[in-house]
Image (tube, rainbow over all chains, first blue to last red):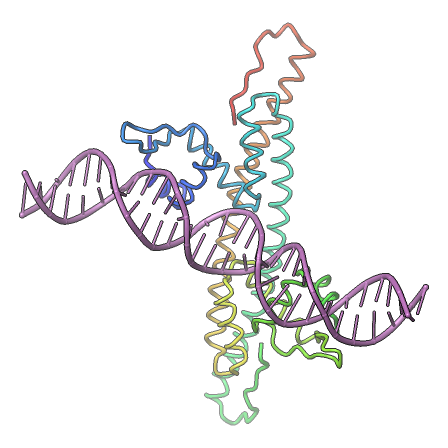
Length: 138
Length: 138
DNA sequence: TATTGACTGAGAGTAACTCTCAGGTAATAA
DNA sequence: TTATTACCTGAGAGTTACTCTCAGTCAATA
């Protein structure tokens, strides 16, 4: 059994967020000790993991709640849960594509600046080249 | 020259967001026509592109502003801008890694549910197997 | 002339945290 | 035994970056 602090460190989710999720029903089955302190079991960590996963790929809390509730409802909801996972995976793959595009933009900028910096250095060591070092704004 | 609507469609950024960015200095050099309507040039689109890129990889607006202001300040800020781009790229690569991990979680769930569903179908067609179809909650 | 459609700024609303506060308990230190 | 430290609690205010609503302007089409 883990304290909220341990879970926070293990899962890289802030204690505030864990309490927020717990309070709002995103992490079922949390037991408390005699001092009313939350104790997270391995099973509970499974809930944290899936909530974190869904949130990280941009699923909103309302939809996360829906998924959690389906899980609690029992086996009859397995096909619907399966569909949700497939949908979420699709969205995650789109995000991956988007992220790759943004990385291309960043790569372009990196090279653009790198060339300017190298050119500037060369001009300093080779003053025979009288071209001015003029770069565009961005 | 493009209207805000055209830019919104081309760049996949809402008109509201474009106005918000423009109003707060994230998109310099927007000119207006005699009716005070914003006109985006190709050059202006470059600003939109980099702001979108930085935001998409999670750079907060304050830091985006810093970058834009460095661009406007002139060539002397090129080394600092280069560093910002490198930092941002690093963050983007971390996000990529994270996204891949979440995709692993989703793949695991997908398989878990798929097996349960297939097993259930098989049991229906092959009632000699009397094992109950019992799945875990999540 | 009227109505359609895009545009404007100001400002309220939203999601999902994120942080602050005031206070409780339990264990260790003096 | 007191006090300090460290962690816990719920309630609720604050934050970011949009996102949406509103009331109103303007130009072109019916």
